[in-house]
Length: 276
Image 1 (spheres, rainbow, N blue to C red):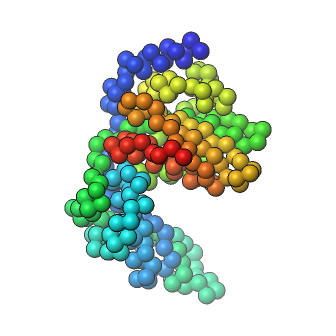
Image 2: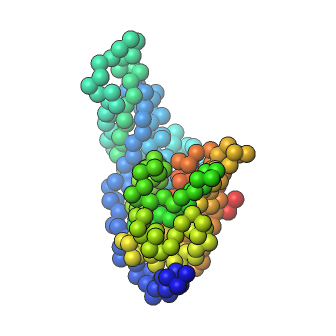
Image 3: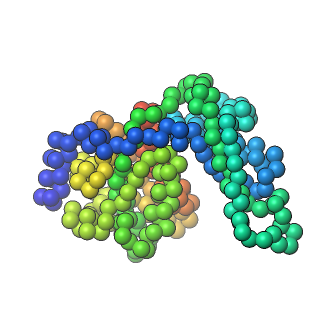
């Protein structure tokens, strides 16, 4: 525990100077998005435009609450007006069509570029603003408990690769760089599935700085047979204290998405996620 207290003191000295590790955002990239569509017909393309615009509005604003804003629907209905370019990639490229499956029913990646001016204007109409400040590289400290099995997600743990990939996918959607500590890092600080939920956020933020990050996101997910899903709790320093929020999700993908979206809401200046 001496090690933990030492790191907490280090955090006090380094607070916010760690933001020098934050990554300058790819501004043009913030206004791009992709989705999977079936075929290249207009009806699937227009639906794809809506999905992509929804993703861009979330990524540019950092405010997950925009997805539930009733004013969003009419904006999405005109999604094609915001698109400056798009292209398809056949996900089955090189695989001959078979049976009744032709181009109409093949899956395609649809990539869209959106007008920055129009997206920013849409955000203004929705009471939001673009979040264009540098985005911190976040170290993820996550304990997982599934029945008798309990562990902490680590960069070099093969068994948790699928979970790490899901977390990275969620962070990519918000253009927030993330990474996991290695097993030796966790051993050095004395973190395991038992101690992690009780460790102060100041310790995590200080340790994140030691291993190449600028901020830390900590949490735990527990499988619930009763709920047939994961119960997750997340913690993030909001500048004045520790924000804490929970979610009950059917999949760990959704739980991790909730974690990253909550952190983005804080970082973008849109307040703390609502505790549940």
